[in-house]
Structure formats: structure tokens, C-alpha cells
Image 1 (cartoon, rainbow, N blue to C red):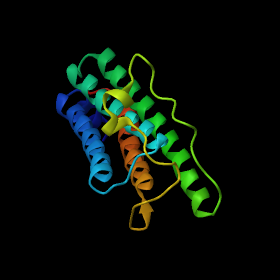
Image 2: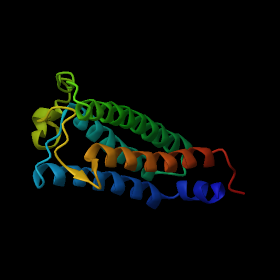
Image 3: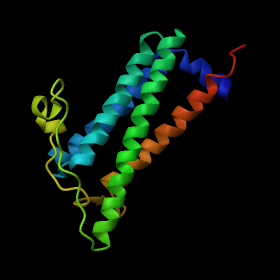
Image 4: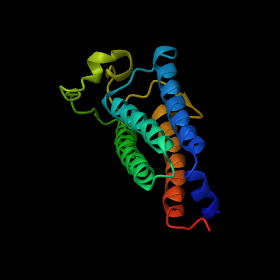
Length: 172
């Protein structure tokens, strides 16, 4: 199995599939925001940025997957983005639980992105927080949007871990 995964990691199309999956997650987030009216909070915006970075990892890997430095760079970006996104999703799930339990919960004031990349000003419909953290305004199967992105990210993490382990295997 790992030999097959290693072989796949040396091809462009699986890396492009990773990017497409991340873009689809972003599309779902934008659908939820602009069609269903589920506005993003600070943590949601940070999770979105992590998902954009996962898409970037796929593009890096697709450039020349047979070149080890690019493949390993793509894996590094992929793991960093997953770690960042899962960390933020865990914070948000915890805040949602506190609100469900009746406690006061909120997120730190969004200070914006760095001056050299003010995404909230460049693309406010995607990266501007408009809701309070911990508030659940939509559920599917009794679970919040945060739970579903958290689940998707863990699924992607399994793939990432298997891809990483496969890199130590030879293709002979």
C-alpha cells in the first residue's frame, strides 16, 4: 500500500486532487456564508487561511513531484497548514461547547493579517470575520460547520500521514 502511495506522490494529478479538495472546502465555506448566511468568526477565517495553504501545498507538489525538494516542501506546507487549521478548529469546537453549556465565550479581537498581506481588506467577502466565535447558527446531523470542517481536516490528515510514511519506502 505504501509503495502505491509513494508512486502516486511522484505524479502530478494526486497533488492537483489535493488542491481541488481544498478549493472545494473553501467553496463550501463561501456557500455557507453567502447563501446560508453562516458568517465566519475569527477562528473560521484562520481555518480558511489554513485550507488555502493546503491548496497551495498541492500546487507546490504538482510543480515537479519527482523533485524531492519540491515534494518535501509540499509535505511541509501541507502538514503546517493542517496543524494550524486543526488547532484553530479545536479552539472553535471548545468555544462552541462552552456556549452550549451556558458559559460566556468569545474569541480574541481579530487584529487583521500582516500589513504586507491584508487579506481582510483585499478580499473581505472571504477573509473578513463577521460573527462571534462559539455561536452556532447552522447544523447538519446535529453538528456545527466547525465539526464538519474538523472532520474533513482529520480525513485529510490521514492521507497526509500515509503520504509522509510512504516517502520512506522505496519504489523498487
